[in-house]
Image: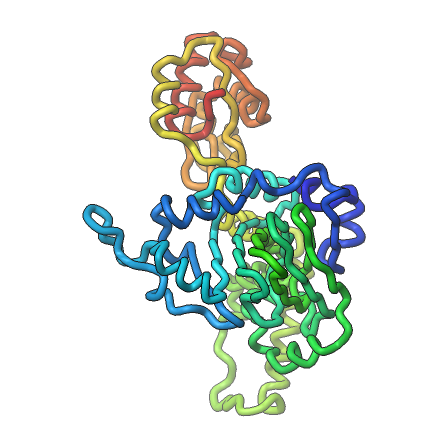
Length: 407
């Protein structure tokens, strides 16, 4: 999906753009526009007919959030939840100049679910998507920066974007723009790096930290922001420090009477801790690298989701499965095979390890599990090491466990 957003190749983007500088790509250089992901008609459907609730919707006017009581209410008999979008209230606020923000579209809007899953695969970091619907000649938010990278996809209408150099490079999630409000206000008075009107089908990439603001022009503007939360060296360092919590030297109390009221009173002890850290890192470099890698993997799996499964269709597929039925590994699901018993398990079994569970099979199933893990379509009659009847047993179980999907 990255090729839908930038005209340069993936390698060029990774080497020269990613995390370093903004990139504006006009629609003429991209394969198609973004109307398949969202459109004015789709926005109306989401607001009027989908029963969307907060926090999946916000509204903002001139940099200030609108009280959600102004555009939400209970849904009436059988749908008494009080925080559903009220189309009447949305209309009133939108007509008065408020921007509609549809949040987390990757969790409930099918075209964007598929798009975000592809982007996550392409960039290798967690991805999410919001939509901003701004009335003519209005802006939703003051100049600010984001703590994640964004791809701005102009869907319809036009919007003028002004982009300025960062005042705080590569901000972390706990370093919001409000910590630098005055510096941002001053920076926004400088000559912008980019001052452009985005037309439908254009894409603007902004690394985190770059100051920006946007204003709709003569008609309603709809754009998608595809947010990417990149992992950083700080994440690796934090994971290593957490791993060192098992070290007795670092858990010991500092001296009685320390009274750390200033750096001078603690300097000797902090230098001592740094010496211990340097020695432990040198002694345990490979182990710490593995532990930090495991921690990043856990965090990534918590922040991303595999392709959704359809429960009714899946059970129908289980009931009708035959030796020729083709099934495939669920897109975005991560797993591995452990079959040597090295983790204390039974060496006569093979274990399929998944983020939320482990599934055991007889060891003879190992070649078949490796085959499905490769991601290509398979059938019970084509699984290596198993006859068709045993293959059906394995595939039925993997379908019920939401590991495979029927094609």
